[in-house]
Image (spheres, rainbow, N blue to C red):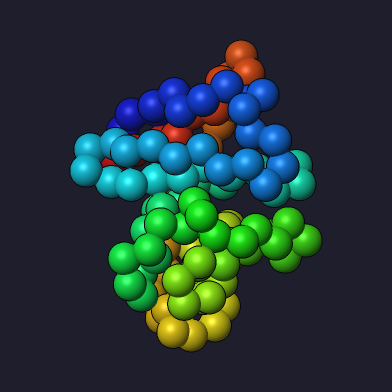
Length: 104
């Protein structure tokens, strides 16, 4: 397992999404309230980039801009159709104001 530095903590203002690719995976990191999450960036229903979606900071969900399925950031589970499959989620840690994501 490898921790990969994604960005500095200061670049994650609330509702700001940092997108990156790693080992063929399209990933996003987002801060909602005091929590930071990392999930797949591509909707599981149809190919749509979730980094262009709508953040609901109170519910800690991100809604797909294409077909409006909302995904919980904590576990990737879709909250409504048409998406049925969850997003993959990744562990996060902050060290020296750097945000790192854990990959297998």
